[in-house]
Amino acid sequence: MPKAAPIYLDHNAGAPLRAAAREAMIAALAETGNASSVHTHGRAARARLELARETVAQLCNRRARAVTFVSGATEANMTALTPVWQADGAPLYLDRLIRGATEHPSVASGGRFAVKDQTVAAVDSQGRIDLDALAHLLGQGGPALVSIMAANNETGVVQPLAEIGKLVQGHGGVFHVDAVQAAGRMAIDLDEWQADAVSLSAHKIGGPQGIGALVVRSTARVPAPLLTGGGQENWRRAGTENVAAAAGFGAAAEAALAELETTHRLSALRDRLEAGVTAICPDAVVFSGNAHRLPNTLCFAVEGLAAETALIAFDLERVSVSSGSACSSGKVSVSHVLTAMGVDEALARCALRISLGWDSGEAEVERFLEVWPAIVDRLKPEARTRAA
Image (cartoon, rainbow, N blue to C red):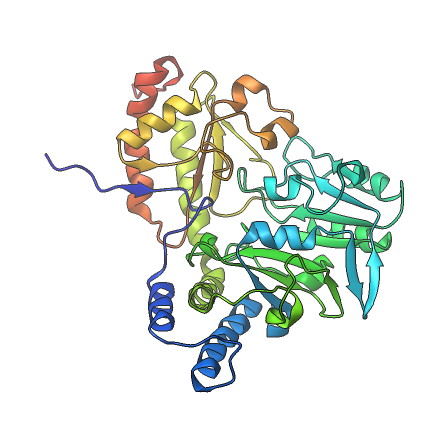
């Protein structure tokens, strides 16, 4: 009997490459020229780069000059997380970093801030930033850089960004948003959020791995460069630009922007998954289930059904899901996100994440729901509800 086709339900870790992105990259790779050269070949490479920059900017409703291409979201975050910014040509010094308790490890590392100058803002049981606690922290010292992700990579919870931005700007701070998971799944509005900069990653929206962007609200207010030594990217990031990757990023951004009008499709698929999971296991806990979430993300746990064992079982069925973030060691460990939300360690070790994307459809959902009861029966049969 032929094996079932593999099913991919881990878009928050990285989405499959879109055909349009692949074609744009192949076309760019077929050309010769450095985008910094002034001859014909160089100008052609520059044109591809600037077209991609304009398209990525549109994803954030900004002009092309607001976009700095970098090697990925980690570099974008590291660039933004600096005590020194430029404001209208003059240095703007920030005394400290305030970051959310559920941030990605690239933000949790603190960037270029000394450890002693870093403070963590607490979240509630749904994973949302505690606004009162944040306001208290902002009032405890000098100007701060506040870094909060738009939407969590594990639970999908969306932060109250406009309220956070208002607090930060009211205290004379700088507001950075890690918008990696938000791109293509919700509108990115730096003006509404009062965000000074957002980080993006191409491979989360169907572009290539190894390229991202830092997008600023105003080019009059930018972070000090992380990489120096050349005038590329308007002196904001030295190094020869990766034109082929940028072309792929631009094509993916164009497609992701078009899909913003159809996110209800992903919401319907996610809700179908959630209903199916809880129908089989009524005691399943859906994390951040009472909060505003991304339309594509479902994070849940069945007590006593260890994530590590479940992942192996799903993989044997050729279904790829995740236990949470895929950005650390590749090992299953207790989620710092769920811990910050106050989830018991035993339950947190059972957390599974399903994340949908541009190529997800009914077939993938039905395959998961076909496999799920058998896995529960094998690993924790007492949790199973059976039809009369």
